[in-house]
Image 1: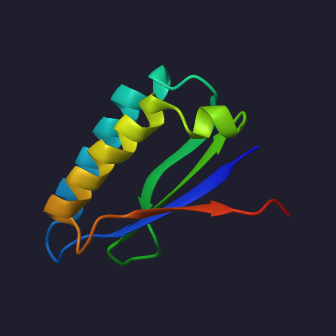
Image 2: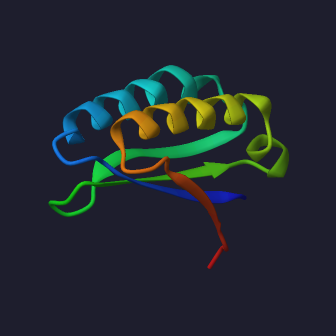
Length: 95
């Protein structure tokens, strides 16, 4: 099961905007992703400006789907507007 971690750092003062937009994209697009088993929403890491998410997919085909690519593109656009840089999704190795 592919597991991805995504991290983004909000621009100073734009934490609320980034949070709302990230949640909106996940609420709108995550339910349409076939093979997405679980996604944990973005949250601040401690009291800073970092936002983290974890996503677990059924298999590699689900992780490589056009729907996931579209959601990642939407996240990139939001993070480019409200983050220091666009976030990065890193595939994690299972324990």
